Image (cartoon, helix red, strand yellow):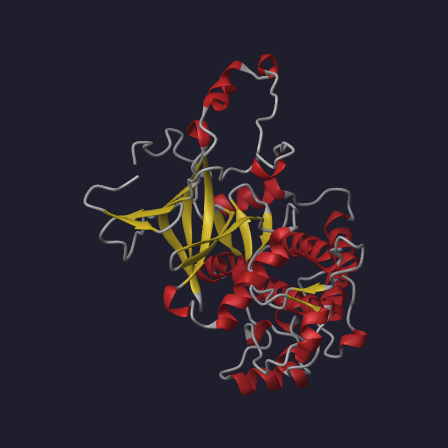
Length: 394
């Protein structure tokens, strides 16, 4: 679909890109991947002895009337993405809200993450982007943002991902700072417990051969923890995540991540395992409970010093208001020596859940959603795709 006043660029091969002339602030881009045989079922279709693809047999009587139109659609159904708006800008790329269109008026709201074109010539950036896609490719979990597609169109390298309509924990903390009061402890612990369950899933992912992939996220921070409008917490941005094997063989001396949320071993450039993510989650939990980033300094050096030599209690400002058991959990998550730290994300999740459900009832995603809508009255429900779909004349 070409916007009024827009331009169309035809790239060699079965890819068409169309966009308006002015896309600086509100980009609207359509990536169309329509070509002979390019549809999701091609690889599974039966072949004749000569190798030609043959059509499968479909029992049309078993298909609901409302879906009959799909059976009459041409085999080369187009895959189109229409960019709606930019929602975030990162160090190497941008994230856009978009609508994915398909056959028979299919429309789905998605997020598109893409590398800025000027960085596509940097092999390390492309490798990190592709590594993130490979890490996410097999993950399906209610508390992990899901990947749908990795694609390339001309000078665009992009991922199509689950769109989370809501806020991130950084937004939540900032709104509470404006109000002059911390996140309610029960809700802060609930959010942290959901992230711990996401980390449990990530840390224990297994490869097809049954071995543990031992993935370390390495960037558990408020901006990467999303909360949708229905109160579901999602762990996002696996851009610097690594398996332990990759980390052990990586000669790159650059320490990546946000220093104020790093573990002591991460800021020191040492070998990392899952306990590093647990420390980072503990730091985020402290910030929700106190509105203070416990180890943040005025410079990298000062932050590193506070992380490796800290002696003050990060919960001192709220010690009298917090249950003793909760303070103990946080302190165990934030032990400077990884050997003394809570080392298993499953145990962290269970301890946090026990803390908020000890009396038999505690917060749920509905409780969190109600809280979000009180803080962000303009949030509203998640938008849907344009059910009319793009024009098929383009």
